[in-house]
View 1 (cartoon, rainbow, N blue to C red):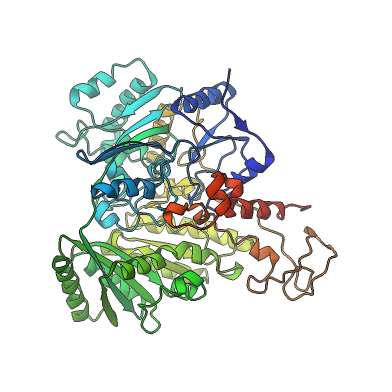
View 2: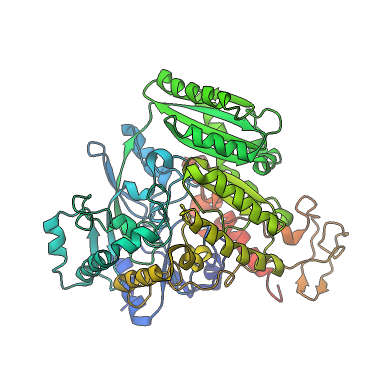
Length: 617
């Protein structure tokens, strides 16, 4: 008899029908498990009723992987404990709802940190970082979440518990004798890897590509003993990283901690062209840098209209088309400064950039990084004429070929008569490329899908990855066959069948994906110019009838936003309003008290957008 409460109210289902992506799907119910036992109970219930489970933490995923039509499993409310922190062993054992920055606040007492550093670290959670194999600003130094996960304790698709960790040869042989689903998984995975090793290594992204999340991480397993004799110990936890909750539910993880850098300084370089900044990046990664991040003129322009970020523009000189932020760490200020100055000399010699400035105070460095991290939210607030949907923003290639890749990408943009925003992780060949399209337009939705096909072929040409950190989800899974090949897709399907034979765990992500355009968010009503509620019209208490449905009357004129319907679609879903007080957050105070999505600004915005997107709002 089931005891776990499922919230089936329409309010809650609507609140959980979206994440930070362009997708929307109304689930049957939402669960808030409080223990590993309740995760097991949910899995048994899913098997009995044939209903799917989609794991979700902060809901900041950009590719739609935390939306689903079955039961949404929200681990962010109760599974939030740091179960152990061992500074001597430099490890922590955590539940999936632990916020990354909360872990680092505790670890910092011992001079330690969890390295991967996404722009959402003040609200994203370890379970989500494992699901997406997140990385962030410092992936040049710390690589991805996968490199920092030692063990994962998981609920398998039959409700049983398995602990995945590095295994000796004898331990692996013992696992293969088990008469359980866990034993079947080990036997099946080893057989697949031995049969398809050469095919996997040939089809997957280039091994020098630090970020490579396309499909399941079979190429990583091929590096392990016994598939590669003498390789590192076999550990299926690495496969679960980046699997987007499609193989198992994480109940606990043991993570590796590293020492906090003693000294960090920041080199800010400004350029007259994007191309110049990309060639400079190739040089900067040679100088012991820990991060090289890029923003372009569109993001720079967006910061001017933002009250908070306007104060962080102090470093700008002139009107750059691109800016690079390069961090250098060291044991002493002299060591960090020496590497930075070498890089500056080389860039000057190559005539790359018109301004290079060093910043050494912690306050200046924090403010500059705050501006860089604000990029996504600023982009999503540019209004209908500058929407940048997330479908190509996660491609990555080796940094050596990044200038050539971007040159071809810009040619592709020109063919479709659109522009793109370019920003983020230049150091590892991953710029978040966001073509400007308005998905309220059927024509632009069609263009998006056509562009996505061409981009997938371009990624394959450079042996890159469709997903560097945001995951395949709904947006990129349909194009995995282009990048990895149809034969490799059949291997991925066998992996899914081994772990989840009934396809109950987050179906439609990575494997058996629906077309990219299915399940897109409903857009708010379009108001004709001079209708009531439009900024050019006089306010009225009467309700205007349009072909789309009933338009609500508004007194506020929405001049800045360009209309009520534009304002109501501005929430980007990134969940900054979930940032807690201990992370410096002031929004949203009601969420601080209840920790419920309905009391977050994002929750309210999503609810209003959905209500005014129907035929009869």
